[in-house]
Image 1 (cartoon, one colour):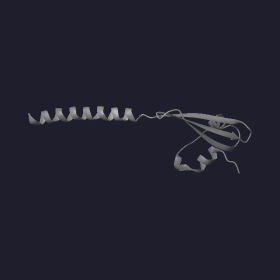
Image 2 (cartoon, rainbow, N blue to C red):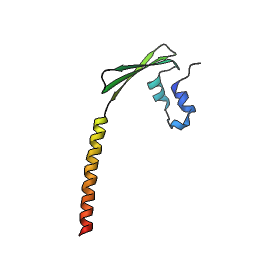
Image 3 (cartoon, rainbow, N blue to C red):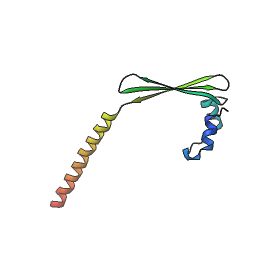
Image 4 (cartoon, helix red, strand yellow):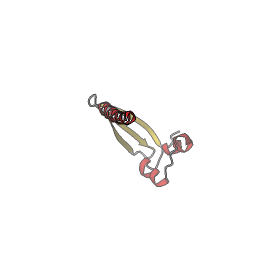
Length: 99
């Protein structure tokens, strides 16, 4: 039997999601979800687009687009900056300790 996503989250308190009635109608339509499908379109290695399609009980079709970008190079850059700052802090404290 089809069920709404809201009913699922209400029965699963571990997700800690509370969806107000107005948001429920706005985000999920007026009926339960009949079908869900994901479509993955790899545009290139750094960008990935995912589409979520939902067919509702009333026949309406809803979709969402999710983009995922590879930010590994940004993480690496932040780690290097953090390491540089940490080195400066350690050097400054070491200099104070030797005085």
